[in-house]
Length: 201
Image (cartoon, rainbow, N blue to C red; front, side):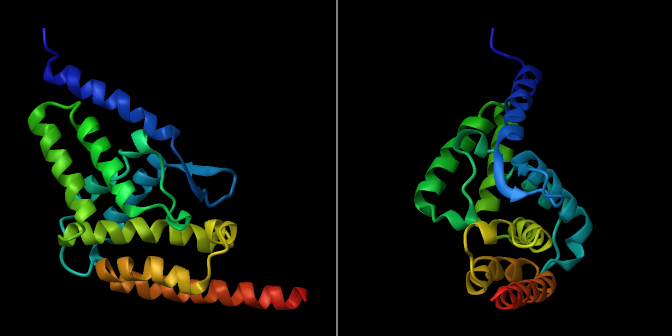
């Protein structure tokens, strides 16, 4: 007998529990450990709930929240691709697309197709909802790095120019007001780093 829709949904929910084991590079703000991808997705959903008024254009916050809850599920199969690690974007895209087909394929067909389409919309980053979701996905680790004294930037020797080029366009495109705040944080952070290194000399 084929599985019922409920059995498929519960199987999917068991499978995505594995996202809690995918460790990201970003630390928690208290720096006690690294965050996992499930925590990252939950945190981003709250960003969308609270900050949707700062999107570059009107967005459907419910759809944005859904995208952000789903966007990293593929890491169950392929792991995390840190922003500063220099992975091939083509390789990453192919691996993640295959993972999305497998994972959303665990669901009843109509529901699986709808969620896969939402995940693909996020990846394309063409709709206003997706642009804003992508902006938040960049904003959260930026905030963490600033408020942990450098975080992954320090670990990877990332420069001010690299931060501006890797985060700026995506955040500015989806949420220019949020980028204005982030840019000031980043400038202050790197100015402090420079002053600190000069003081040590």
